[in-house]
Length: 85
Image 1 (tube, rainbow, N blue to C red):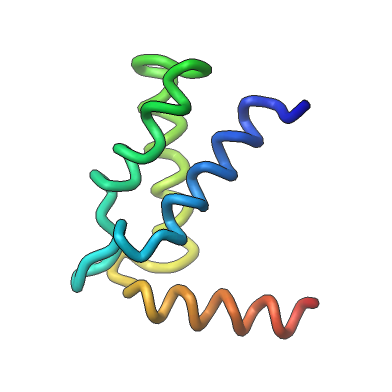
Image 2 (image 1 turned 90 degrees about the horizontal axis):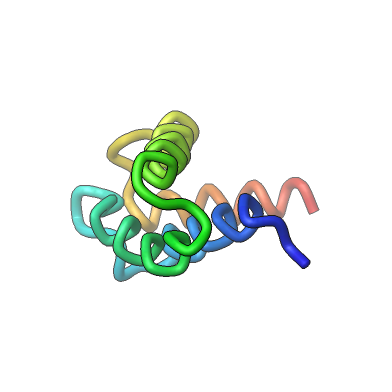
């Protein structure tokens, strides 16, 4: 059985990898939040959920940049997997 933190990370990246959660300016964190909150609120509520979500979003932006497009993100991710598989 997976730990709730592992489920959070997996659900976060499922939402990030969904092209519907991006717009022409980059990732839409409101959409990511909407995808995550329902399934994750059974494990984390209120301030704890917000803290984890904001931490994950900040780490994503640190790694990929605040204005990365979906196409840039996918291309870089595919390149990384090709080089590290």
